Length: 349
Length: 276
Image (cartoon, rainbow over all chains, first blue to last red; front, side, top):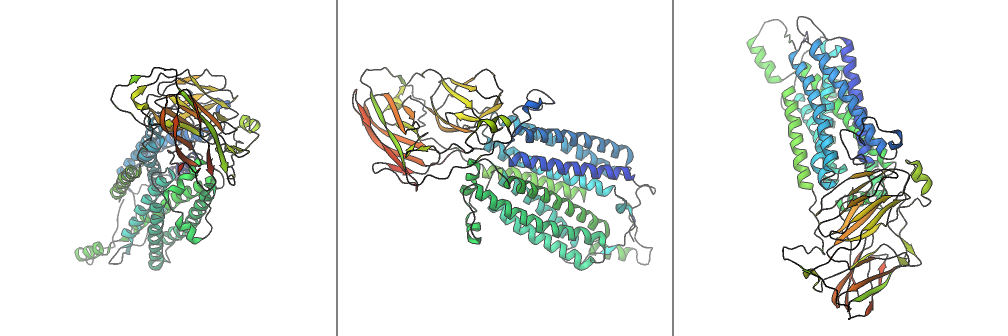
């Protein structure tokens, strides 16, 4: 039996956990706002930064067309920045675990860095070709956003009641362990999010993202099936695995639909399966930029990004829980050799 | 665990930068870009210059215009009767907004004084004109005739980039381009359907085909040149032209729906710079 006792039986308050969940939700809204900026090609509609048209709060006359997306993104980003600062201070004062405090500081540093990168993205567009700026700044901007989301989700997990509830210790299977598998899945999804950002920002074509989708599909399906096969009776692990599978199906559907509508609006409609694969050239994608971005491509792409983030969050939860309850086979063997006949293992985090 | 996650994220950031750097487009070299360090002789008008004129036609079924949606801005929505992107203007078989210019013929040895300023207006939530030619160093005056704000965002490869807001009633923005560069995309990021193309040449021998397809390039020194016709949608055509002393030469070209060219011309698809 593993019991996460905290320090001297201490546990974080429910309010802190609920607030961390709120910050995670707000970050999800920010990701959606960012996706709408990219989808509407609104990133350069407000050329100055950190002010917008020389003001913190813009005049209502300016809040039209693409400015709505860019300014909303900045406004929500400001709220997330403040919310993260409060979270970091709260965790620093209330949480007794040093490593959770460090994680909260990393989260605040992340949102600060993200704001700087976003500002650099805006300012550089006045001095460099946008294609270059997008490739070298916008893609990392998208990656830091997803990584920050992952950190906030982790804090929400670490402050949850379930993290401290007693759990039955499980021994991982030998060979490719579940712990490794789930970490591979998290890494693959992060890389896939980078490839998706690269495609949206035209750093490269759809092929890397499509290949990544194949790899991620295999890995998530493999991970989830392994979890369900070995731990189908443990909702603590089985539930995020089922959710990850469901999100994967939704994500694939959204991705294919977004791509089909994108090609149609670029004047290159996909008529059959062969045409779908033949269309995967950068030249065809570039035509999309000759026309105004339209619905439903914008909404489908934004939803695709948000579901991608939710998939990452679910896998983070699964990974943390797997590390929480599953002991590596080799470690258990070593422990058994050392403490044969001793009391059940208890771990304190 | 935490260390592993942080390491993963760092690897992913590195991957993002590397992949982005690998995928970055190479700058397109303009065919009219004859920049060199050789000092150029100022061109002196000799009085025997000629004129090139003609008509640009279009054969075949005109492509369906791409729709646009200006509903996000009440002013644009009310002042855009045609809700279509204006990248194809065909009327009675004549094609407008083809950028026509001469190249070769020894022009590169001369330096031409830039003419008076050119104007790019924002009117009815469109750039007017959509296709504009400038001489290196010529002043460009950008005005906003609309009762809504715009941002003007040229994306050159060889010239400095800039992005500037111009509200309703704001004074003109004046800019110059210091290097020759063809088809610089100009975009309003606030209204993503608004696009224009600016070509900056080392000489003033260029024109834009009007709504009736006609163009006229005057004051051309006598000689033999390549006459280039570039349209953002239908590609490029080239014809040889000899300008007689104090004479006029007529060159008509036809763009075809399938991408073909006039009998005397060679055609190629137009590789446009990125518009983002």
